[in-house]
Length: 234
Image (cartoon, rainbow, N blue to C red; front, side, top):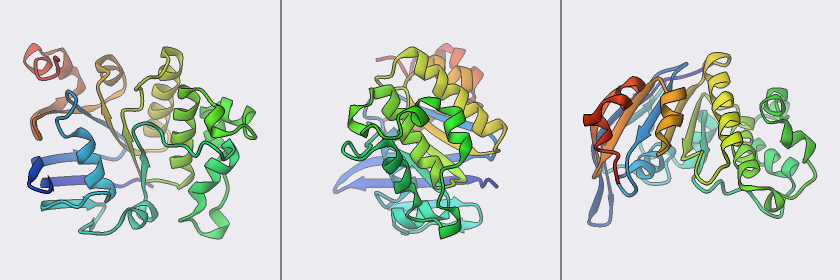
């Protein structure tokens, strides 16, 4: 079902400005990998490179056995890279059901359905199918954004700050959902996050970034190391 994602020594530029310098990250099937760091250190740029929103200027990104090169975001989505963007970006005027159905775009006709386990993970979505996306709370919108990505049948799920601005009870729901996807679906999960306790609780592997570079990599238990934490202090 799942596939490994490998980022090998990538650079990324915005014009003359270099956002990423020699970034290497390995995401294994059935594991949750967290990328941590302060604001502006290149975490979201790393995800934009993986999803094809921005192209790398050096290095390689490999998904399964395939080097992604300059394939556009829609092709990467069809290959099995599901993306939950920062800020959720649900369609505010579409209903919850219609938002979920936007995930059908890259699917064969026989697969155009909403997997039942999505409603088991996020029961609120089932009870609000006819509610407009813009009328949901921030936490409900985040659940919808994750559900929409899961409709695409991803092999790798990439999430950009899934706990940002979310109430604690829904953060717990999201954590349980990601653990289910890892443990029961064998999914490869990569998340960018600033909430250390969340990462310590659910992540298997961590990468700590500063100024566009990886400063540390190791098991999530390394978050208890003062030398690691100093890279995360504001």
